[in-house]
Length: 229
Image 1 (tube, rainbow, N blue to C red):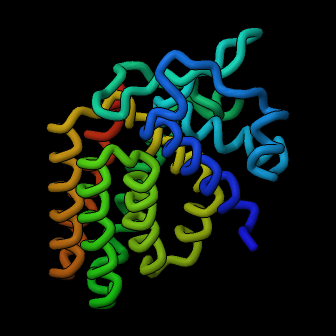
Image 2: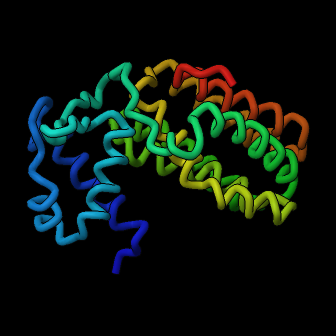
């Protein structure tokens, strides 16, 4: 049985497939939430989460009073980002700035602590990101990105920093999805290279370099989203 977390992701994947295979066409209004939730056999809350994920990835757009429409062309960046869903608590700038501080230090404290299996997992996740981007599987691309960063967090020597990361995981995840509609092939290629430099620094037990590479990576991602933290 799928967990609460996996249900929206599973449904988001099905809807993404409907977009990429042409079952749902660009400009088309998707069925009502009532109809869609019945089709997938899920709650409206889970469906809304799936739709929000796809909207952040630039594949859907909700227009108040009109409904939700397919707007994404998976083969090209749209140049338009979805509204920031946590604006009532933190700005996207705040979250990127916090990520630089938090994940930079986490990377420093994780250097030399990752097992060979974990390093290989990060390498595999990076390759998956690359392959999924080539096939325009935006969901899988971000899922692999989440695995990459989460693996580093799991090796951090400071339990409180790990706990702090968990408290902001939802917002961090959103900043990993948010720039996708603005990401062109060159930026994705650069992001992949940044991941590999982070892996190399961690494997070499070079905490200072791991921190610097992680901070650079997050800053570059923020700049892709039009921010300069």
